Length: 289
Image 1 (cartoon, one colour):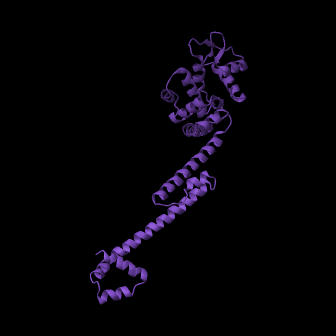
Image 2 (cartoon, rainbow, N blue to C red):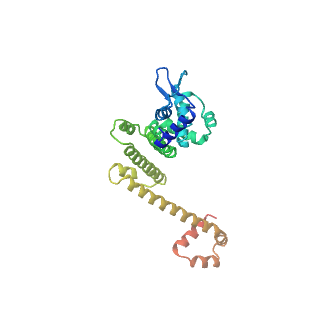
Image 3 (cartoon, helix red, strand yellow):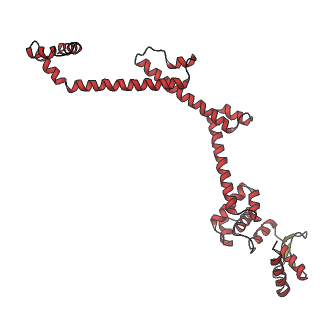
């Protein structure tokens, strides 16, 4: 309804100029459009003029007529238009052009209407702005999408946990936490097993870390830490040996020169000036020449 002042202004206009638009009733005499005009006619003591709606979509008529109210916001206009579109079958593009509404605003109204009839009604009556309603719906859609994504992940990787949600034994977050723990333990187990396989291939005779976990001597986390230490030590050892071989390669011409002078005083002085281990190595290397 109009405010009291606006209603008095309308009554004065009807009294002075007459009632421009008739009040619309359906075939049973139910008011479809013109509530303010009827009240203003009563104030002006003017007999109201009526017409009977003969169409087959009274809801569309009511919504469409409300778009032209002077006292409603653009957000309300957009929502009423979206509601009219939902019952009339018209396209949003056509209605946006017809009523001079932006397509983005009308699209936002349609989203609110689709996902929350309650919020849409609050926008229609002016109790909530279209922007606030749209933000609320968007946040709700995002939460629902995130929840569905979690549930789909559970259904794919842990159907038993998903079933416990269905049976109200777990919340989604509790089930996701349990799944994360499972997957982390599986990651640790694979890493430890790979390390055991590597040690076996290297000829290591120590008990496998996997065996120690299964015996209850250590946890998977502890086994993972030991595996990391073993891999780091192995990496360092390989690098040291590689460097040593590179050093030998760089100095190999000197060894070849020494091997080319067996029994010479030059060779003897070189060998005498070496530690016992180095003398043994020179003998080994030069003996295969």
